[in-house]
Image (cartoon, rainbow, N blue to C red):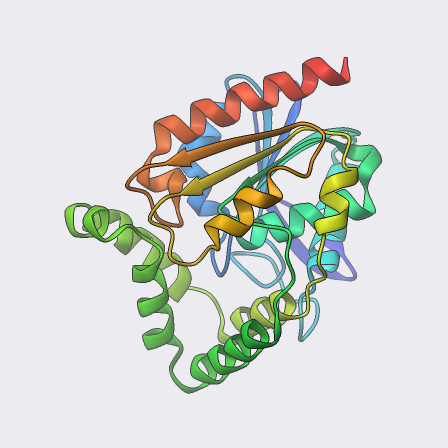
Length: 267
């Protein structure tokens, strides 16, 4: 892994391949390990960067609350260190929230945005309270909360037939420090709405949805997919919240084709 210093803290990331840049942003509360197979395959065509977002994986905590804008600043700092001026960002769940914050703050660096099981809305009052309750549960029993959380990410049939995938995500989530998990949860609770941003984005936006995803408001996201000037939508049958594991080949090939289209438009 490579590292940079950001606000005197160490930020770790993987970099593999050459050419146009694709940044893969993991979800809550995971780290860059979830992209292992994607990095191997996609680095044949692109320079792929996969950070450990602040406090997670091998990256150090920066604050008690890791706001999406702060995480976007970390991504921008990695790109600056690597002297990369344009990228396509693909963010899973929380990583999509970070991607939208990046699009808001660093539009000139963005060639395209892929939202994997993610959306542009802020939490409503009920959502914020749910996150507050989750933080209490994390403090009380992190292992129980994250074990249940990891299980809930998958399509039920897939989880029953593919326990290794569930175990893989469970192990990654359980490896995170309690305060880092809380910091990420609090940051998601406080995130801004980027609905208006979607309608103003000039770069292509890809929405990847799982038809069995109980954690995402599918009807709302499908409506959001009508906002960007150039939007694409991929709906996956029999897939929950982690399409890159539940349907890896389809998601990977769709992402590869999307990145190639994004850079054709830039050129």
